[in-house]
Amino acid sequence: MSVAPVESIASLSSDLFYDILRRLDGPTLASAACTCAAFCSISKEESLWENVCSSMWPSTNREDVKSLISSIGGFRKFYADCFPLIVNKEVVEHQPSYDLEYPEDWTEAEYYGEMNEYESTSPLDFVSIVDIRYKDKPICSKVLWGIPNANGFNGWFHNCPFRIDLLTYADRDDNNDGVVTLSESDGLPPITSMERERKDGKLWRELREGLQLSWIIVNRKMKQAANLASWSPLGGQRHWPTDKDFVIRFGSVLPAKDILPCQVVECILIMKFRMVHSEEEGAQTTLRLTELSMQLEDMEGAHVNGRNSLLILKEALSCRRSKNYSEVLESCRMYSKVQNELREEKMRNESRLDRLCILSGIAAFMTFWYCVL
Image (cartoon, rainbow, N blue to C red; front, side, top):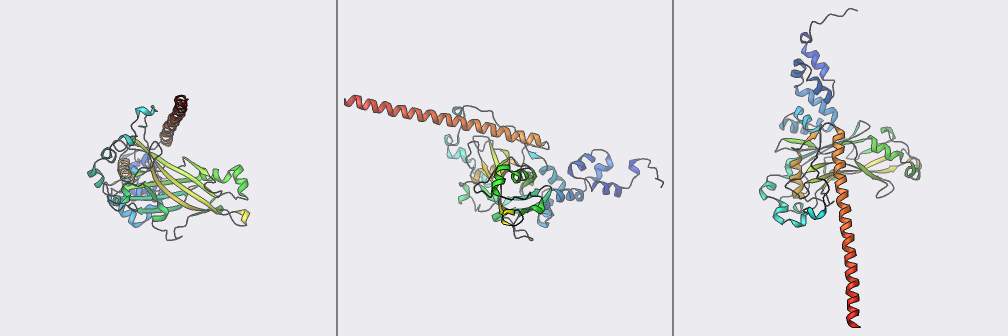
């Protein structure tokens, strides 16, 4: 078989270039666009990036989500905003607690910020686009328009802890009425008994290594988007609150400068599975997703209220991001380190205060009896 010689890459058909590029994933497509002018020109086609987004985030296949993405700048911009993960290196090194300003030291006006800034950030502007994968296979896609129960400035949402429970409020899947399960057919190891699982933790390891979460927040008014998840789990707890529950934690560190005294907060994304069947019961090992939620916590572990959470989410849409996953993990580790140091310092201060109270009580008791006698 003879092969026709090619004088230059520019002499090839643009249709051939397109056929090559449409088979690439996002990072490879972005790299290919830098190789030559022909690839650079064709890589600007929205249909290429729509295919990339559809493969990476199945929820973007929905017609309403496609319209949303088109309205905020298109699939190419959406991928550029959401593929890199949020990195925050502004976590301050540990300082003694007497040098830190805590929320109780602020006036109400300082803590809640400017009224106009909050009123310009509407809960209805936010859209959550969530996808879960297990061993690179999509198992769940959810879309939530707006933030539930945020009924204006004067409602309870203003002061109560911010929380989004996606399984309660998100649109139900057409296929399974909202029930998300994992079974041995998805790659779960068979569990013969919970006692054995408690000892070897095989199922727990498979969940930690196989699960991936993407939680994208879009602001329709600002026309910006960001991925608040860490892709892979940051931690978790097995057999809690019951033996059959597995809690996996994802998240990111978000800036809260000029919003909260601690300057940064942690976005905590919780995924909880419960075992509904096991081989011990004579059935295939099956887990059901029972919780998928988001909440924000400050450096002291206190829940951030709804008002400040909206401002923080708005700020997160324009913060620094990175495609280097190790940099993302380092940011989360740094936050945990500083948070643990603050907790230890707080416990030491409370211990000193307890001892002072005991000594004061003993001194008062001895003084009383000295005066009586």
